[in-house]
Length: 163
Image 1 (cartoon, rainbow, N blue to C red):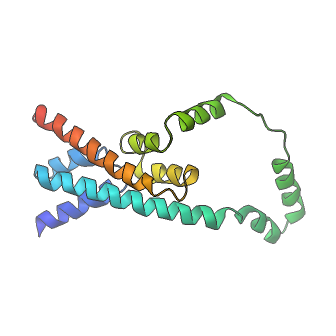
Image 2 (cartoon, rainbow, N blue to C red):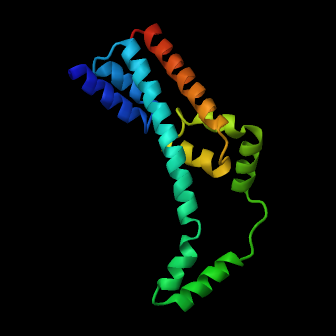
Image 3 (tube, rainbow, N blue to C red):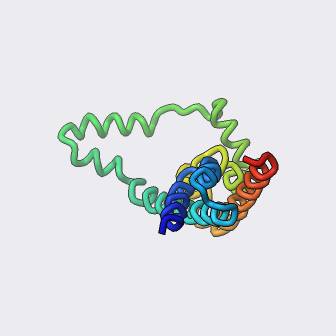
């Protein structure tokens, strides 16, 4: 029963942050096969869960602010502030927007899938994927392949250095 609790623990940790899960799995005493399968399954389950959860949250809360303003006791002031915010003069290109546009056009879905297990957390990567590429079922395939590749790479590094 102890091994199953360890596997469940690794799967749950892999649903959130994938890069730290493989060393943790080896630290708690799982063998290579158990560790690899647990990390990959946890990452795929976590990404799928957070991808659909973020889609639901984006749909639910997209019109939240205007409805919230209607029920506030100081709604006239809040409505004016909201209107001023919506009608403000926006910069067309800032340094940040240029970087985001360049990254999105250069790397796209594949870039999010590759960066999520290592640089981003699984929930944040799932949110970005759903925000910029909603309804694209290929992102789940790309993310699964990315998780398998990163896990294989880290396993190879760990076995090479006998960690």
